[in-house]
Length: 115
Picture 1 (cartoon, rainbow, N blue to C red):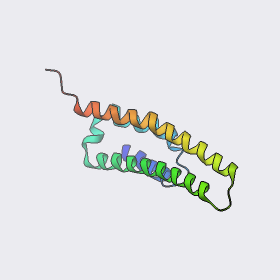
Picture 2: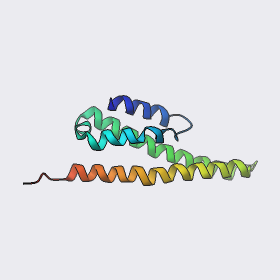
Picture 3: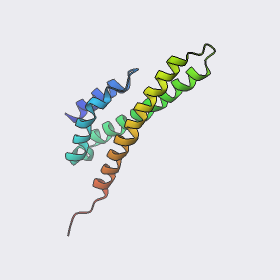
Picture 4: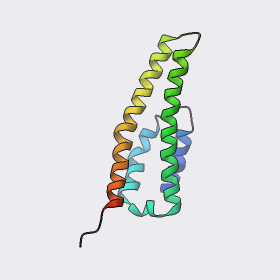
């Protein structure tokens, strides 16, 4: 089920609109945090790493689009404004949710069992 969710995430993140990923993030996070064995399998690790890479690339693409619109010969303020707002929304989501998830994963991974 986790790998299917990763495939869905890859499809969303490979499209021009990454925002729908927010709708599946809760399930994605739930698998990663609540079912730790997911990240113990090589396929689970690969899916997790690929989704994280695609999330990073999606933000890079949003920022690149802002730069392209700002540098375009035919300046369209409304399009630039819309893209800036969209990039800020996506960046905020990633900074808040993904950063916290990665910290939780590191905490769970580095936790030592009680003696």
